Image 1 (cartoon, rainbow, N blue to C red):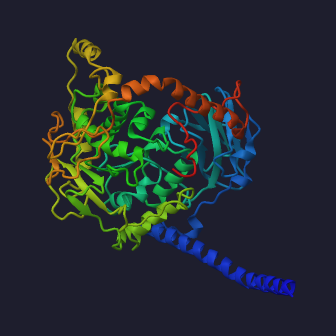
Image 2: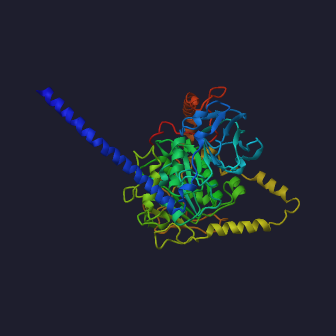
Image 3: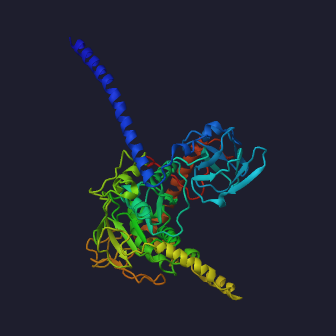
Length: 574
């Protein structure tokens, strides 16, 4: 009897499943349609909707592709974890166009930023039409070049040593589909710098900041990522930014990503306090932002790498304005005074950004919806994190930590008191100044060279051990904290820190942030062997994975360009 009941229940379950499957499929299709509709709405909002007859199509499958490594199938599978590795300076890829089709563009996706190549176009009679190189664009994992309509074949010559091409696509003449990323170079001068620790923090914890600045306010915006979370996560970050309307390529600093157990270990992993500040100061001076927005002093949910970035940023802002600090980046870019610094969840001088209002510039979507659309592109992280405001880590609340242009009054706009044409005016002034620079007097160049030779090294104020051991704290009403890893004091000044506005003077009132503890100097020496073993383990892991990009190097290693480290055991979840 019991067996009969079990069989009956099993039969009913199968019937129910058969009835439900069409509904599940329809639901999945409905969700996909909803996402596609949102993408189409955003495309129209950005003024990029075009007639179907004018759209370019992907003709890669119709092309004849050959490579020096005989791994052409790896170039068209859309995966990041396969590709063609080219050793030395003799690798090549050729592409023959299908007959009767006018080509429009070629896109090359690299494992890491390319180091050297030549792209040559040929006519039907094999005459060379034109050649482009890396100097004709900018380094990035996506290289996009327009093609001449008369081009019948291409030859990509790899001239920069060990490089990996993971995907190659050819498009017909016409307007490229919206999701084909055609990045512009990073901005020359930014109104807004969004400083994100990892690839996804820019939307999880900073919400609609990027589309608000870049699309709604039309302000030159640069997104800077500190940690390298791995190649797949970099692709997801670019897809996220593109979906939110950004068109200028971001900056990847490529420090190692790890869920370190303490701030001091995180600082050591990133090369020490001075190296962290040097990297931040260089980016601030290069992009010259009017406003910087970054993460929480307490690391949102306590992530120590978040804490390091947030707590280092105020000190980097101070150092960037001081010509005596980090003279190498000062010589290249000059000093720069940031006018406003916002910290996520900083409770003093708080502002609340409205992410819910419909934005005409986004086709009526809200900034929260656009940020959520961007987060969907972080496919490896969506099962762990969601983008939402009005929560414990409310991504719509920030505090004005420092200002040189006065306190906020409306408290709902990062750009309050910032001129709308600040960057355009600065670039115009620089162009005029460049035309008016007088000829250098004879003998002056020698004096400058001598002065530079005598200048201290970047940030040189003592030994590396002494700098790493220095205890930094935010200046609060009660002075410096005795806790070397303390967060900013709860009782901070009621007014934002102010500066002179003169990029040649050190801004007063901005205290250095707690970053290191006094025991780091000894720990660095004592732990050198352990760190060496850890690095060796990462190298051995890379050797084991070397084969996935085609032919190995002579020693069987999978060499990556300097600075491009990959995430270790936290590849899926931080």
